[in-house]
Image (cartoon, helix red, strand yellow):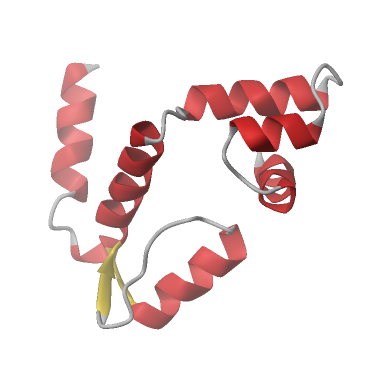
Length: 105
Protein backbone atom coordinates (compact mmCIF):
# COMPACT_ATOMS: atom_id res chain seq x y z
CA UNK A 1 0.00 0.00 0.00
CA UNK A 2 2.82 2.39 0.87
CA UNK A 3 4.47 1.71 -2.51
CA UNK A 4 1.18 2.46 -4.27
CA UNK A 5 0.97 5.88 -2.59
CA UNK A 6 4.58 6.61 -3.50
CA UNK A 7 4.05 5.51 -7.10
CA UNK A 8 0.87 7.59 -7.41
CA UNK A 9 2.67 10.60 -5.98
CA UNK A 10 5.47 10.17 -8.52
CA UNK A 11 3.00 9.93 -11.40
CA UNK A 12 1.06 13.00 -10.34
CA UNK A 13 4.00 15.23 -9.45
CA UNK A 14 5.17 17.43 -12.32
CA UNK A 15 3.13 15.39 -14.80
CA UNK A 16 2.25 17.50 -17.84
CA UNK A 17 -1.01 15.55 -18.24
CA UNK A 18 -2.16 17.01 -14.91
CA UNK A 19 -1.86 20.54 -16.27
CA UNK A 20 -4.94 22.10 -17.88
CA UNK A 21 -5.55 25.30 -19.76
CA UNK A 22 -7.47 27.82 -17.68
CA UNK A 23 -10.59 27.47 -19.84
CA UNK A 24 -10.63 23.67 -19.55
CA UNK A 25 -10.22 23.87 -15.78
CA UNK A 26 -13.15 26.30 -15.52
CA UNK A 27 -15.36 24.02 -17.64
CA UNK A 28 -14.52 20.99 -15.47
CA UNK A 29 -15.10 23.00 -12.29
CA UNK A 30 -18.51 24.16 -13.50
CA UNK A 31 -19.66 20.79 -14.81
CA UNK A 32 -18.61 18.88 -11.68
CA UNK A 33 -19.52 21.70 -9.27
CA UNK A 34 -16.10 21.26 -7.67
CA UNK A 35 -15.20 24.06 -5.25
CA UNK A 36 -11.61 24.50 -6.42
CA UNK A 37 -9.95 27.89 -6.80
CA UNK A 38 -8.95 28.78 -10.35
CA UNK A 39 -7.08 32.10 -10.35
CA UNK A 40 -7.88 34.19 -13.44
CA UNK A 41 -4.31 35.36 -13.84
CA UNK A 42 -3.04 31.83 -14.51
CA UNK A 43 -2.86 30.41 -18.04
CA UNK A 44 -2.36 26.82 -16.89
CA UNK A 45 -3.77 25.07 -13.81
CA UNK A 46 -2.15 22.17 -11.95
CA UNK A 47 -5.23 20.02 -11.32
CA UNK A 48 -3.56 17.90 -8.64
CA UNK A 49 -2.48 20.99 -6.72
CA UNK A 50 -5.98 22.47 -6.98
CA UNK A 51 -7.56 19.29 -5.61
CA UNK A 52 -4.92 19.08 -2.86
CA UNK A 53 -5.69 22.66 -1.86
CA UNK A 54 -9.42 21.94 -1.86
CA UNK A 55 -8.97 18.88 0.39
CA UNK A 56 -6.65 20.80 2.70
CA UNK A 57 -9.19 23.60 3.00
CA UNK A 58 -11.91 21.05 3.68
CA UNK A 59 -9.84 19.50 6.48
CA UNK A 60 -9.09 22.94 7.93
CA UNK A 61 -12.81 23.68 8.01
CA UNK A 62 -13.32 20.46 9.96
CA UNK A 63 -15.17 18.54 7.25
CA UNK A 64 -13.57 15.31 6.14
CA UNK A 65 -14.55 13.47 2.96
CA UNK A 66 -15.70 10.48 5.04
CA UNK A 67 -17.96 12.75 7.08
CA UNK A 68 -19.58 14.12 3.94
CA UNK A 69 -20.08 10.60 2.61
CA UNK A 70 -21.78 9.68 5.88
CA UNK A 71 -24.06 12.72 5.63
CA UNK A 72 -24.99 11.72 2.08
CA UNK A 73 -25.77 8.19 3.24
CA UNK A 74 -27.94 9.43 6.11
CA UNK A 75 -29.91 11.72 3.80
CA UNK A 76 -30.40 8.97 1.19
CA UNK A 77 -31.64 6.59 3.89
CA UNK A 78 -34.06 9.20 5.22
CA UNK A 79 -32.40 9.48 8.62
CA UNK A 80 -31.31 13.11 8.17
CA UNK A 81 -32.93 16.04 6.39
CA UNK A 82 -30.92 17.47 3.54
CA UNK A 83 -31.09 20.95 5.08
CA UNK A 84 -29.35 19.71 8.23
CA UNK A 85 -26.77 17.77 6.24
CA UNK A 86 -25.97 20.83 4.12
CA UNK A 87 -25.41 22.95 7.24
CA UNK A 88 -23.11 20.31 8.74
CA UNK A 89 -21.19 20.07 5.45
CA UNK A 90 -20.95 23.89 5.29
CA UNK A 91 -22.71 23.95 1.93
CA UNK A 92 -25.92 25.30 0.50
CA UNK A 93 -28.76 22.84 0.01
CA UNK A 94 -28.27 23.15 -3.77
CA UNK A 95 -24.56 22.33 -3.48
CA UNK A 96 -25.29 19.34 -1.26
CA UNK A 97 -28.00 18.13 -3.64
CA UNK A 98 -25.62 18.30 -6.61
CA UNK A 99 -22.97 16.44 -4.64
CA UNK A 100 -25.51 13.73 -3.77
CA UNK A 101 -26.44 13.35 -7.44
CA UNK A 102 -22.79 12.71 -8.29
CA UNK A 103 -22.11 10.43 -5.32
CA UNK A 104 -21.88 6.68 -5.95
CA UNK A 105 -25.01 4.75 -4.98
